Image (cartoon, rainbow, N blue to C red; front, side, top):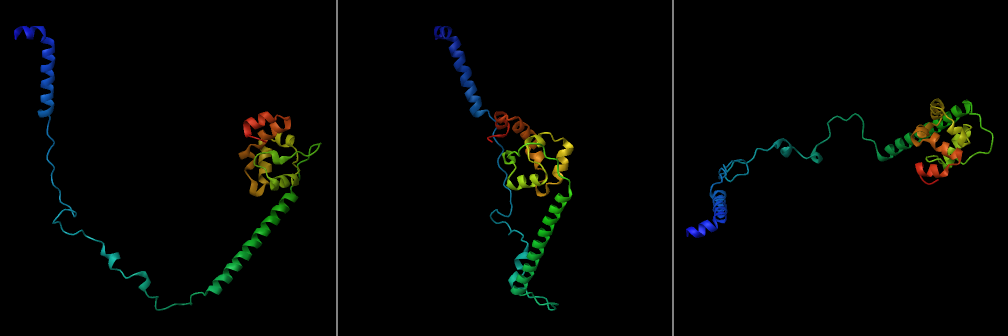
Length: 196
């Protein structure tokens, strides 16, 4: 036996340590504390839960009666329809008056002096549609080089006259777009803003 121990001493020592580790791991670990039982409203034998009976015991809204004194009778469906028509007509009249005032305001403002040459297709500018092209034409803006030359003050002055389209020159970058279009740099334009 001694010879066997001397020849395989290291292996025997490793097996012995491994056995001790497994024994410690199985029996030496601390056991979890036993669960303490708590009692709440869901436990067997517990008292029923307290309830908010104010809403449960209240009469249904459908069963409630109207107040004893009513100053005016409720409006009929025909009356309500008539009121809706009056409101719609007044709103349409306000819209027409606002549009007329905006057109008068545009007409009162001096137009920007158009530059020499043929008008450009302003609808190629991203964010500019037919209505905006017409409005820009009324303001005397017909060419890319005009817009490309705008300063911040020019943009603010034009923006104030665009009505419902206010904010578009800055948001859509008209000055930068028109710089590319005025130079004829379609590749640069498409690289920055997408297909023309």
